[in-house]
Image 1 (cartoon, rainbow, N blue to C red):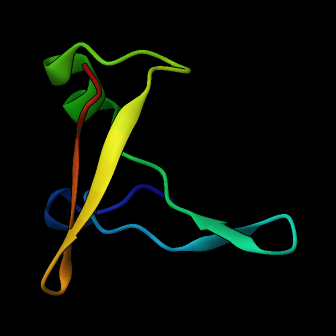
Image 2 (cartoon, one colour):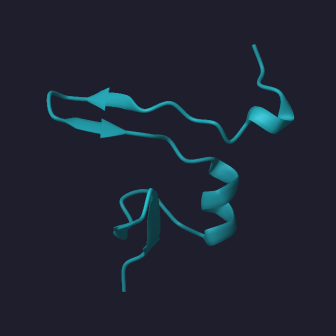
Image 3 (cartoon, rainbow, N blue to C red):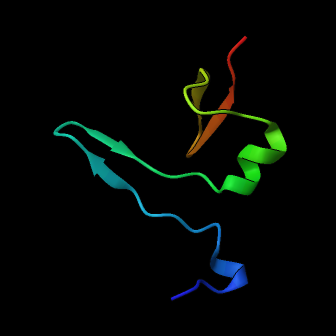
Length: 56
């Protein structure tokens, strides 16, 4: 079943192993940013949001 256009960026948090959680990112976002598999990124918490930026 395909998602509605307005719901395509809604993601679920899933368990990875015993102590980690993860989410998938929309492939369109990653293509636009030209990010690749195994690329290092920086994750920061700002209020109730998470900011993910390229690692330099």
